[in-house]
Length: 244
Ligand code: SF4
Image (cartoon, rainbow, N blue to C red):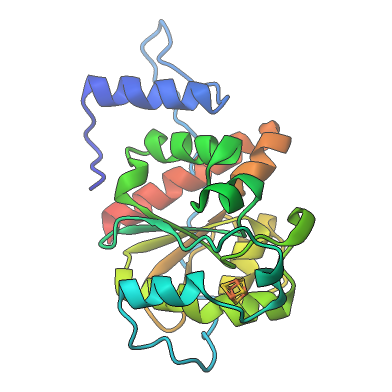
């Protein structure tokens, strides 16, 4: 649970992890005046209902059956070149659900989402808002690695959507963070760029689960100048979460 009153140790941890994200943190000046970190504008509008999962028979599956179904799935062409399907990882009772795009080479090898450099950055982003990786749940729009790390095709994302929908139904998260354009566009059924979705609040399907959009850690590794914006998004998500 996120709280607003942080101990000095927690504040030190936050500063440490922000430093490791490459974000320069504004600190108290000699004058004693506090500089505030920028916070993303709160759009607070239900301006785009998220996707429906489509027709499928995953609705009654428990975690074990769902995992077995995913690991043996041949529902789209992505199964042909995968080492293994990457189901998802984390707490089944997580309040925070983190959704990315697709497994990459490391994930395909290890069978876990967000490992490697992008995973390390994601871990640091989570730690910066007081979350351990183990207490959230992390999943992707598609469970199998697209060849050469290409984007998942729309039909591949559509084939895989019922699995993520069932994961969301089982977890019942309080908040969803969509990492990057592919995650956001598929969850929200839109072609909007990430830049126009940041700072707004969307909702998952007809539920009251808010979705906050931010940049994908892999993009942040390529574009470190955007890390501060991601930090703004995380702060906005933290503020929203604490009000739920
Ligand atoms: Fe099945 Fe999804 Fe993998 Fe396609 S990406 S084979 S739908 S698990």
